[in-house]
Structures are given as structure tokens and as C-alpha cells.
Image (cartoon, rainbow, N blue to C red; front, side):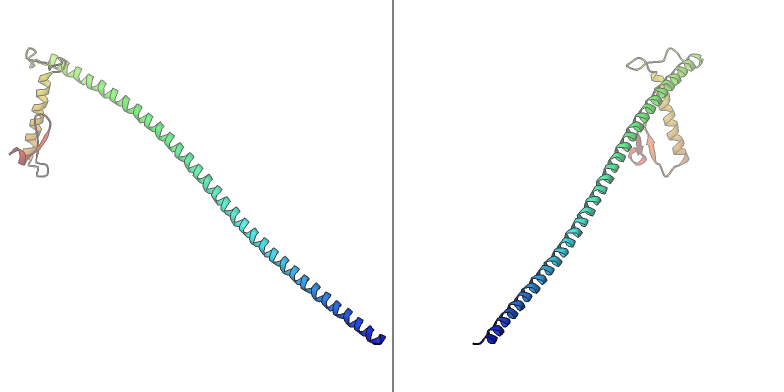
Length: 177
């Protein structure tokens, strides 16, 4: 073998080695670019998931704030209702007291009227078991109820055929007959 053949063999081997090195370099570079691109896609996907999670967290925070506001509003409404209830109870108590005072005043006026009325027989007034009410006044109220029933019957009401008994209870005409 002469030297020129050896030189050509060496040049051929160097060229083959250079081609192999270039192929390896290009292959590694493509793998590296593919890996970088895959990492970019993965990072973009993770960022998208993080944004969705953050949006969900903000939505839950808004829902929690809204629920807290609704709870505070309900507490305020309950407090207002308690105040209204207390005010109405106080008003009711005042009105009951005023009604009792008026009832007492009416009873006093009835007694005075009986004292002044010359037609009232003061000896025949009786009292109930407690001794403080005028039984004759109760009988007078029963007479007025009977008069009301007679007026209703005379008017001929077909709509209301009930009868008011002396004790104040109502009965149907059919039950009475």
C-alpha cells in the first residue's frame, strides 16, 4: 500500500468521523429543541391550570364574601325584627293598659248611672260569686243579645241563619228547630 492510498483511507475515515459527529450533533440539537418545545408546552399548560385555579379561588372568595354579607344582612334584619317586636309588645301593653283603664271608667260610669237613675231598684242588685260585678248588668246584656237576634230574624237574613244564645254562642237555625 502506498502512501497515497493510506492518505485516502485516513481522509475517508476523517470524513466518516466528521459525518458521524455532524449527524450526532444535529440529532442532539433536534432532541434538545424538541425537549425545549415540550417544556414550553408543559409550562404553558401549568400556567393555564394555575390561572384557572386562581380564578376558581377568587370566585370562592367572592362567594364567601357574598355569604358573609348575606349573613350580616340577616343578622341586621333579625335585630330590626327584635326591635320591632319589642316596640310592638310595648305598644300592645300600653294599649291593653289603656283599654283596661277605659273599661274601668265605663264600669264606673255605669255604676254612677245606676246610682242616678230613679228607675233602678238598688235593693235588687245582686253580685256574682266574687262580689264585684253586677249580675243584673249581665242579664241586661243577655236581653240586648236576644233583641239583636230578634231583629236579625225580623230582617229575614238568608245568608246568616245563626242564632246567638244567651251565653253568647252561635247556633244554626236548623239545630235550634
